[in-house]
Image 1 (spheres, rainbow, N blue to C red):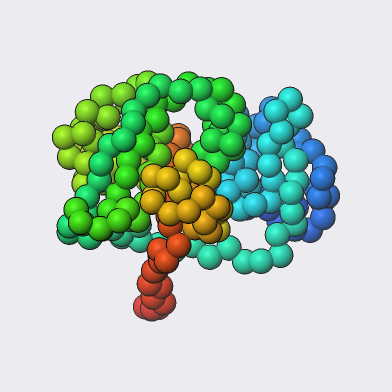
Image 2 (image 1 turned 120 degrees about the vertical axis):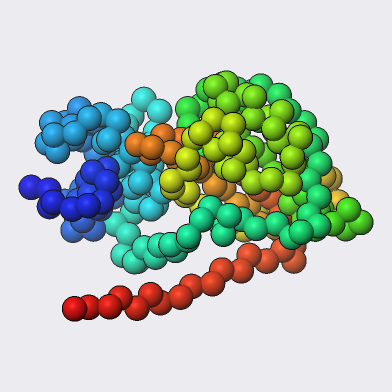
Amino acid sequence: MLKTAKEPKYLTIANVLRERISDGYYEVGSLLPTEAAYAIEFSASKQTVRNAVRLLQDWGLAFSRRGSGTIVRSKGGTKQFVQKIESMAELVQHGPDACLTQLDCKQIDLSACEANLIHSAYKENWWRVCLLRSPNIQSAPDALLYLYFQESHVDLIELIAKAPSSLTHALLQEGYGEQVSEVAQEICPHQLTAEEANKLKVPEGTAGLRVVRRYYGAHRKLIWSAIAFHPPGFTYTSWFAREAKQTL
């Protein structure tokens, strides 16, 4: 039985499934039931169930294998901490003198690696924009950015070209009226490939950072994604504040 809550239904379902995984009801390595089965159990649409399962993947509890379904990866065991922000601009802030240069823009079929990172299908068709960012016009680059858009948002590329320093989600809202309501972010160490290192002007094999962001709109629809590579010495800083709630 689902508890009545103000949270989205897909999040409620995801939390129920997370508890089942944590309790061992679904064992590590086992297949989760199908979307159709969950849709019946939770009286939800398949899309709602799909969004819930994607959350399990975001939490590192499950992964999808083409042709096999969704498999339990881990029981978890660590608490999930959520950073609440007042606006999307707080997630990624560029300095006032930041310089973005568009290197490439083309229509591609996603590689297996790209599909896994942005949670899309292998060989699915997307538009990919490659940008190089520097703190200012005289500095070495501090980020190599790959932005992924589907055909329906191809006009956004022209907006980026006209205002490369603007946040892409702001351009989305301006150009399409599409509001980003949720962002999944993953930061991990990454050994830069020859191509990445060459663009960032560092030696091949240098240890850097990889940041993946997936931007979701209404009903957790994936609107666009970004993969960023950073050279050594780049630092992400986050501020967390405890929110005091007044009780009556």
